[in-house]
Amino acid sequence: MIFEEFRDRELKLAYLADADPNRAEVDRLVVCDLLEFDESVYEAVRRLAAKWCAEPSVHGGKQRPIGASLVI
Image 1 (cartoon, one colour):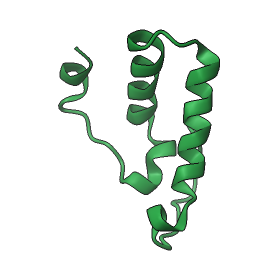
Image 2: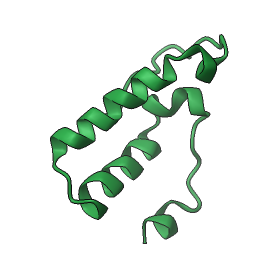
Image 3: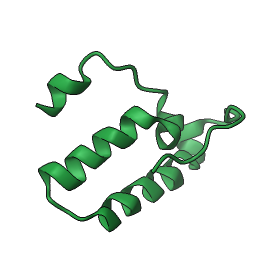
Image 4: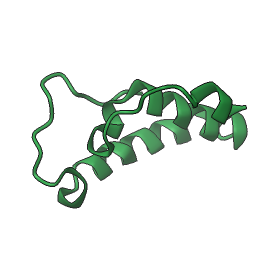
């Protein structure tokens, strides 16, 4: 069901995963609906996404677009 809902949606590049509302919605559906964790776990996953995106091996030195910020 989650796959069908997101199959045609565009995702931002990996280094912008934390600022991508579609990825945030996938995270919420998987963490809260599928795995049945509460909202605090979802928020922790999103904060972890921000930390991951800040890793040089992920962003490769690319500058973040103005306004790209964490989506929770």
